[in-house]
Length: 440
Image (tube, rainbow, N blue to C red; front, side, top):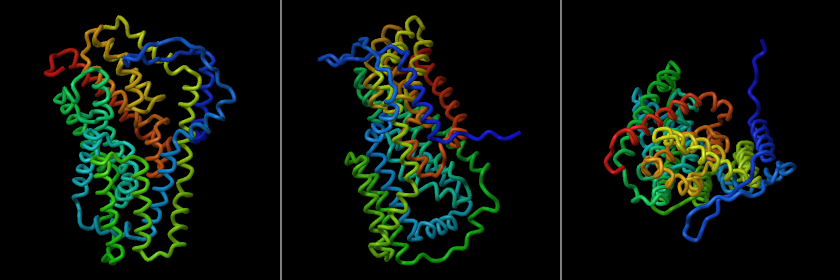
């Protein structure tokens, strides 16, 4: 029997765009209107059925995601130039020869570090360049690209989902729900500890499963680093430090991070002794190599454009909210959680989703006897876990591009973990309505 081949990522996105356009013909239109006091009210409007707009949506999708597309191209070119110096390969070989059998400790430490980064300052887009660093490291240690994504991207998403200090989820949602900022931290910290511990256990288990034998640490022959290679690696390390300081202390975002890595690539090329033409050629080659993956980000954003232009996102959300009436505490909280997870497929931005859903969910949670803290936690879990699989997430698509993992292969690998995390999220939500929790 001939084995079925998974469709190309572009085909999948095109099919979703077409499906969303068809839906705009049948779903009534609606929109939330913000009053002067900041409250939201829903009103019905005429839907705008989408036809030939499926083509213009792709254009608008590219405009909408221009920043992250440029970021991918620049960072891809910078890392290509960095790899051309030979310093990364030489440094990785030296690192592997030094850690010996302690590689699993390194992987566990990285997992905790990136999970903590997601929990404390909402690391999301900032994971993309780290994927470009850690994936080659994981492969050279005898693992696969999925391991690199696991300890960086998945770990940061687990931390993001169960955050206790994340200003982009906890901070915004609690502010809109009129809760003291970062209150109820104890139970959120407990959730983060449980989920991160389970992730570390999975990392160790997966490490045992995929590690190639004999280990690369035994097979690699190392040579001393040249002075140029050493300075290139020092430049890379300084770049990572500056990135962390910029993101945590200086409110850096895409423009600053993009400029930082472009500067890093050029400086490393100069240190390696490349002339100006070679530096430009390597940058262009790297951008060309990652161009296809960068284009996916623009195409995927077209899905959101169709739904927004069709005026049906808010009406779908309103229908879901009305369906919660009479569900009871456990049923209502579970439904809130499910709604947030589903909405994440069409509104992957946590800030945008909070602005739309929290003003509606907060008063409703009061009516059904669910604490607002529990409602915010349902928002966090629902927003974060599905980020690891939704095709509309520009961060996911960009991270997969850096890791050279096709989206279809990623879905096959990650869907079971996402399902387990969603179930664990529900299990952790239930105590908030079944038992008294201090501060909730």
